[in-house]
Image 1: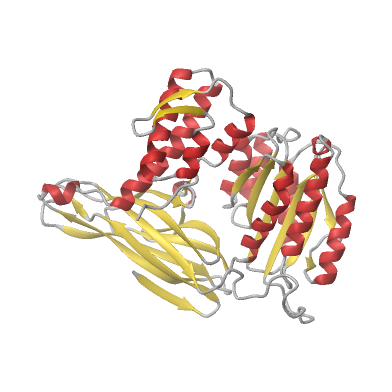
Image 2: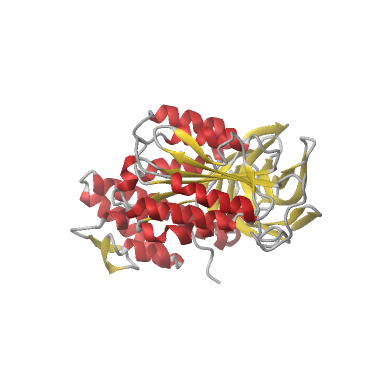
Length: 449
C-alpha cells in the first residue's frame, strides 16, 4: 500500500488484492484495487449549513450545486407530488453549507432558472437559503419533459463559478418524451467531466435506463423514490453527500509496460460501473479513468491486464495503478499508487488459486448482469430465460451475502432454494418492486469478513 498526502485534499491510499501467480502461458492478471480517501471529514472540514461563520465578503465559493426539479404536467398527478418535490428541494437547500454557490432549475420541455434567476448562481448563507425556499412557491406543474435542456442550463450555470467541485441533483417523474434520445446523449457527452450528477426517479412512470444512463455518464448515483413522501429525506441525504466532497476530477491512472495492455477497468463497489471505454491517454503506455468527486469514502475497482506470453520462473510488473488529482495550474499530482505483478509458476495450487476479492467482485458483476437480463427477458415474455437468470441472481446474492438485493429479488420471484437458485416467477409484480430491483441492480456488497 502506498499513501501520499497533501494539505488541501483528502489523504488517499491504494491497496492491491490479487493472485500474482499464473500458469505457463497465462495471459491475464486480475486485481482488485481498493481506494480509500480519509481526512477530509464528512463535510470536507467545513461547517454545515447555518452552523459556521457567514462567508467573508469577496471570498470565492469552493463548490457549486444546481438542483433540477421536474415541473412537467405529470408532476400534478396527484397534486401532492409537486408539493413533495417543493419540500424535498427546500430540504436540500437547507443542507447547502455556507459559501457554496447554488441554483434551482424548473424543468419541463424547456429549462428555467427559478433561483437566483439572474443567469448565475447565489452564494449560500441564511439569507439566500431563505430566498431560494421562497422562490420554490413559483414551481408549478405544466408542460413536457426534455431533460437534456435541464442539463444544458445546469452546465451553463455551473460554468459561471470558478470552483473545483460542480454537482447537479436531478428529479423526474416521467420519460424524456420531448427530445430525441440522440439529443439527450449529445448533451451528456458535452457535460461529462464538467460536473457530476445524482438522478432520482419519483413514482413509477419514468424510464430506468434513461436515468441510469444519465447517472452513469455524469458519475453520479441513481435511485427510485417510489413514494413521493420519501423525497425530502432522500434529497437531504443526497445534498449531505454532495457537501462532503473534498476533491473533484480524481482519476485512476493505469500504466502498463511494453507488451501489456488493459483489458478492462470497472468500478465494482459501491456500485458496478464499467470505465473501460472512458480512458483518456495521458502519456506513453498510460491512461486515466475518471472516478469523479471524493469525500471520506472507499471504492473498489477491478482491473484486468493482458500480459505477454512467458515461461515458468519469469516475473514482471504488469501494471502500476496511481490516483491522480488535478492541480490549479492544469497539471496533475499522484496522490497514491500500487503495483500489479505477474509471476509464472508450475505450481498448480498457486496458479489456480483465485483471490477472494477478485472472486467476490466477479460474482457481484455477474449478479448485476443477470438481474438486468432476467428482468428484460420477463418483459419480453421469455419466462424460461427470466426464471434461469433471476434464479442465478438469487444464488449469487445468497452466496455473497448481498441481503439487500436478495430482498428485492424476493419481491419478483418466489425463492424455493436460494443456494441452488431454484425460483418461480411471481404471477404479479408491482411496478415499483420491479423498477427498484432494476435501478439498484448494480449496488454491491464487500467481501464478507
